[in-house]
Length: 80
Image: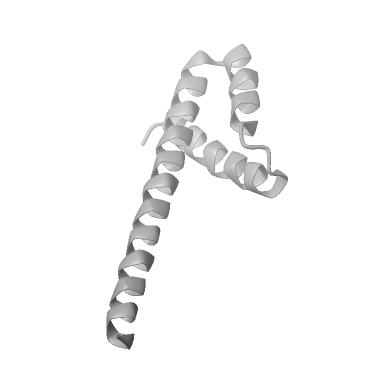
């Protein structure tokens, strides 16, 4: 992994921690703007890292809900 990818990855992880703690759902956009003013390459890598992580969270939430629904259905069948 190159320097840009490594920095983007670390910055994305830290940004999402602050975003989660603050409740500001689009905090990453502000960080991206700061990056864009200094390095377009790092901004692009950072935004890719953010998008990938946010997409993974949505997919994980979907899977967790599906598993919970299936467990509830199985539990309801066992109670009947």
